[in-house]
Amino acid sequence: MSDPALGITMLVMFIFVIMLGFPIAFSLMALGLFFGYVGSLGDNVFILFVQRTYAVMANDVLISVPLFVFMGYIIERANILDRLFRSLQLASGAIPGSLAVATLATCALFATATGIVGAVVTLMGLLAFPAMLRAGYDVRLAAGVTCAGGCLGILIPPSIMLILYGATAGVSVVQLYAAAFIPGLMLAGLYILYAIGVGVFYPERAPKLPPEERNVPLGTVLVALATSFLPLAALIAMVLGAILMGMATPSEAAAMGSLGSLLLAAGYRALTFDRLKESVLLTARTSAMVCWLFVGSFIFSSVFGFLGGQQVIENFVDSLSLNSFTFMLLAQAIIFVLGWPLEWTEIIVIFVPIFLPLLDNFDVSPLFFGVMIALNLQTSFLSPPVAMATFYLKGVAPKHVTLEDIFAGVMPFIYIVVFCMFMVYMFPGIALWLPDYLYAPEALSPAEMQELDGPPPPAAEDIAPEGNFFDEPEEAPKAD
Image (cartoon, rainbow, N blue to C red; front, side, top):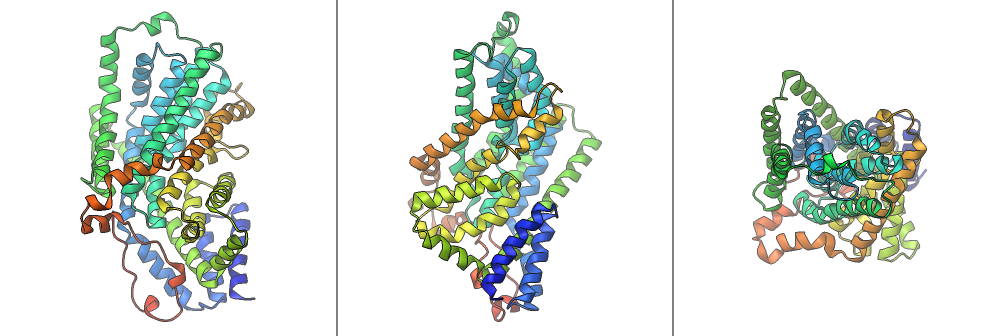
């Protein structure tokens, strides 16, 4: 069998193996080693394994992953979500659909602080979802609001997903955060507008709160906001602002955010040894998963590219005579479908590298492509039949709430995501204006521009069974 045929066989085998439920990271490594050994690499595939592992572990960009994850787990366990939701509920009491608006605003802020979809949907499913049902909200609307709001952390910075995409694509995480900032706020704003629209035109689905819950003294509202909303918002603003303004790298800002989350938890008297221990263990488990996924992905993509599988895909795409629009449509459709059986981490580190070499052929910016993927992955958590956010909510919802109700509730929000993607594609300035304004080449020194270039992506085509690649260790990518 020829090398290109081996490469395509390896890709098909991987899809088959993950459908059987085998661990993805170790399946990637095993398939890469086996097909690399059977193909032209031979024994050199083991040297490739060592060097790719070293390259991942020496990647300074990935330092921010465990720090942001730790920050999220500490905030999650600080027991401030109920206070945050209550304060936003009081502040939005006069707005139609106020509970839905408060839920979405709480989800946006809390998802930004944690970035963990399962945790946000589960906690809001225990807190906000029952509150909406008690207030007489339509089950489908309440379910859709909870699930869609909980997924916003994938897109709104500081997002773990954008860090992994930046490390995979060789794009500056700083610029990715700037590019995703406005689309993230835009999507959250569209969700809130939809909730208000339902409250205005279909008040029976989102009834107003009783007068005693709406007519709250202004002083009470301000005190509630000052003790719950402002501290968390200030922490997020400091972390994100330090990154966007160039005052700190993502890793440095993540360290600052971790310290801030510890101080915030201590201020709420929620920082105990057991919670700290649990957060550290969960952080270590999540970070290990991400690192091994990167190791497996780099080995798999390197062997896949060396065997010529990437060239086969490029030739196939070229034969379709696609333009920029149809290529983006095809790529986003594939990622949309992959979101059913796979988590976003697997999509980013395994399948996105297949599309990256094609971007130059269609004059698509990797920065813009990353924002579109972040928007698209919102749907992967919401789209039936394998919509993880809906299953998270079902696990904590009352027994009378069916999966069919939750699926029906998330459908309007999927349409909103598609509309948002269409707007960003038609008006790229929504995503690209802020990074162009903040990091215009004429406004930065050569050293600053080099820093913003981000780490170089793994170049599979540069791998050879002989020469410097296997003789010398690979230089670690630079941090943002």
